[in-house]
Image 1 (cartoon, helix red, strand yellow):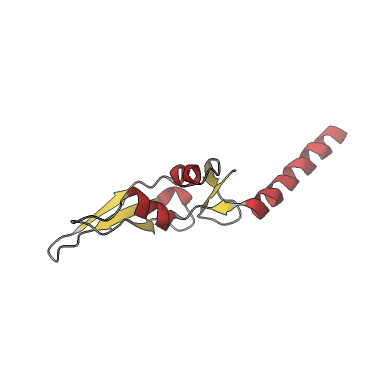
Image 2: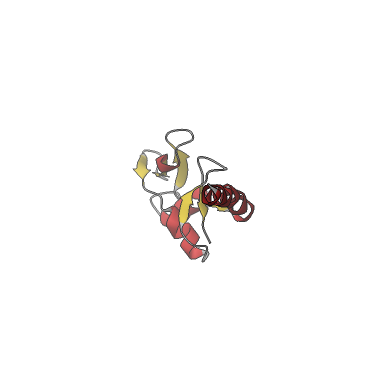
Amino acid sequence: MLLLIVATAGLLGAPAAMATHALIVDMAEQCRIQYPGNAQFLPGQAYLVAPRDAFSWRCKRVSVSPDGGIIADLSVDPDAWCSRLNAGRAVISLTSPPNWQCTG
């Protein structure tokens, strides 16, 4: 019984520690980096398909041409954002949904 209490106490302390050091992934910035602007398109823009669902983040690119269109449903890589900052891997934020946070 004592082992169960100690294990539970350890689990309860982990989210609080993560929350104080969490680096939230800037999905808008990551879209701009993954899909930079060029002569045909503006930089990528982040959007959320389903509220509170971190897996539903997408990027879209809007044409600079008045007769152009939009390329939507492009993937966005939260791990790349964390990696660029040497901040570990990206995981879903339990304290700030639908965001991702870096583990390092």
